[in-house]
Amino acid sequence: MSQIKILWVDDEIDLLKPHILFLEKKNYHVTTCNNGQDAIDLFDDINFDVVFLDENMPGLSGLETLAELKEKKSSVPVIMITKSEEEYIMEEAIGSKIADYLIKPVNPNQILLSLKKNLDHLRLISEKTTLDYQKEFRKIAMDMAMVRTYGDWVELYKKLLFWELELENIEDQSMVEILESQKAEANMQFGKFIERNYEDWFTQKTTTLGKSEQGGTKPLLSHEIFGELVAPEIRKKVKPILFVVIDNLRYDQWKAFESVVNNYYKLEKEVSYFSILPTATQYARNAIFSGLLPLEMEKKFPQFWKNDTDEGGKNLHEGEFLTEQLKRLGLNIKQEYYKITNFAAGKKLADNFKSLKNNDLTTIVYNFVDMLSHAKTEMDVVKELASNDKAYRSLTASWFKNSPLLDMIQQAQQLGFKLIITTDHGTINCKNPSKVIGDKNTSLNLRYKTGRSLTYEDKDVYVVKDPKKIGLPALNMSSSFIFAKNDLFLAYVNNYNHYVSYYRNTYQHGGISLEEMIIPFLVLEPR
Image (cartoon, rainbow, N blue to C red; front, side):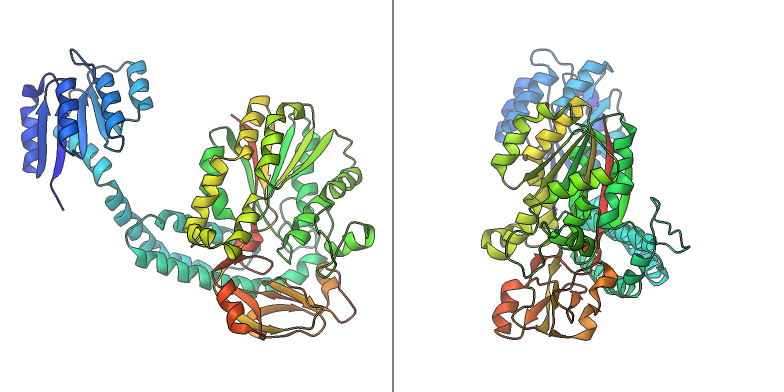
């Protein structure tokens, strides 16, 4: 490692000789000067790694020098040192993006700690994180063997996500690979759990806490969340509610931009619910807004419902479904529903957001993340930008920070709206094909199929021979559903190699995985 170069700027630099000698003994190279102008000149000529800057100097002050240094090389960390503890000076310095703030008299160990924190922090964090995950690895493996309930699976999934986010910037990629293998194992076990329990969830009645009145336990499902979680917030009549459903948003993607939302809202309640199968928009999102299972939707609203093989849009009547559900719940309120499918529509709603302040409920469906996942399949540039889960999260966070949706959330906070954020289902990066054969009337989705004459690999799918048992309509009397497990996608035998190469490493949904089925539901209060 090359020697670290320090620029130390202080009008009383001679008094700091012991500190400088201490650093030089630690193999740091220290250049000194006693005024701001000389510091700026030296800064131009030499590539320093860090600057120690006295706040109170004659001529150019520390804050003025700081502004000049940041303008020239903003990436170099500047550590401000001052005698003053006045709040406004601290605020100005922090607002100018200093790396650290030390109060005189400083001791050598304080200086050394600040250097470690600002120059060696990535390596230190990496080493600590790796060590912590190594300790946690066995515990996660043991937890996986002990999982029995849906709540256990939620906790395990959150734990895996925590470590995925912790490990994403470390230098030791072998740890990341170990975690990936743990996630794959978890998804394998989760698939078995769903196979054993999913059908039973439709014979149990859920209360808000997910406790069955028949003595077992089941999670809240897509068709239950509005009545169980949104309606009680409406009935409080304390604040207007902004209900945002971001299509196809995974838990880890929410975590990627949670800190941005936290600038305006504080979390009041977090619930994890389960998406119904198939984890596809026409089923899961329609279920949210109708408060009904797909089979019930088909029976009660045949004019609104379309099956997989029917022509036409499958999500064109969410607003009507929501209106009908509000009537059933006895909620006579002022409400509006919006579906945003492009930037222009989002910008238009953001520009007119103040007109919504008198609504009891404003519902917004935002489609960007779903469009992003589909674009990865079709566009090479998006394949590059979202090459893995880490990149996919980063791309989602970048979109959110620059989206009209954030503008709406900021305005909602100013107008005193309560904010509810959720999604209809997640998505999984599909890496491995599983062969399937179906007739011409078989549905086209890569993570599930429905049809009459399906041939498949038994171990790769969850098979439902009687769709009515899980609240799904059947295309005809002998139709069944199959749902892909793990990270598999269902590939037709015809033209198999082309099919596999085209769809491998693409984001798909409709099947069974932690990423697709376990959904965040967040209630937030304005700050």
